[in-house]
Length: 440
Image 1 (cartoon, rainbow, N blue to C red):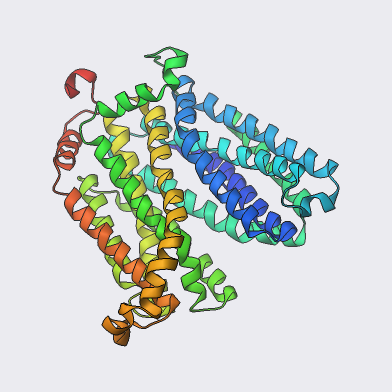
Image 2 (spheres, rainbow, N blue to C red; image 1 turned 180 degrees about the horizontal axis):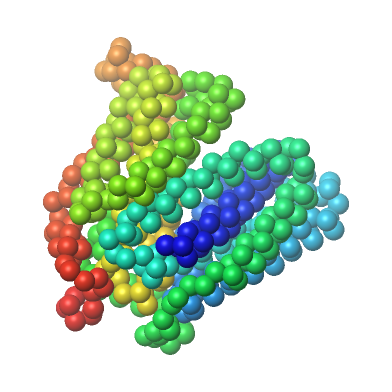
């Protein structure tokens, strides 16, 4: 476990640095350009690149030893952040105030790619757990990873704005380069005992999406699990897009920001509970129960215009996210052979991450042209306005409740499918990884 804790601490430092850079760059771009369009394009490009890159990054993890993959990630990130620092120092400050500036977008792209390259680590860390942790302890190890992610998000969200405000972009980049270098030095001291890599395909084929899909298809029910989580992310994009607008209709921006700082503790608490208690003997059942609770919360936490009701619901919801993430990781670590895990984790990341930005683009018009009119001047005012409330904010609230109902129905249906039953039986089998013969 000592080696795992060292790798986890190293990955936490790297993740914190990368999240910190991207948050800080986003804040800085808005302050420099005053352009919502620029920051929205950044968010779309970031999420889209994360979704697409998972296929390739997973193949890197499978192709090389895990420590080597992490070192590759760190070196590339260091080069890109250094490049961004050089661009910043050589460019006149007034150039960055123009949202169409080529220098600005080169700077943004270098920072973005530096942060995204760090995703190699998150994929590699999941496979390292398979190597270092016995099967019965992997759920708890995945819980610790969830806690680390929560800490990274919380600290980065607080200090990125403070450093941009008090120290400026140049010192933020200097700090990022320095931290990345320290993480690399620390990683060279960590010894990960790992067998030789088994290359079941050529280098070109190992990146091929068709081979990755074949690896996932070896396990009956695994596609169902991935697409179930993808659909959840698709619905979750509703909250990602509109929650700030709804929250700011209830409280000031200062209170809303402070509240999210507190709510982020939910990630940490949820991860710690998994690390302490595990996921039980049937993690797939735990996944569905967590989703039932999450979608039930989504139905009711905006049923009245109350910041207290919203905050309590969001806190419980965020506590359950590490449970859902740890469950998927734990199942894959058992049923997927180690030599294929990088590609499968990368594939899952790509497919699942692609859903939220898709919803983000779709849900704005749906809210604006259907739900908000329905609760301001439409039929909804007469039907439910007397107890639900009326106005634009109640239109958003109704959209959240409808999303919760859809999510709950899909979860209950998924629990009755053959894919769920097949994957449950495979997971319960003694021994770990499913071979091609067993899946036939």
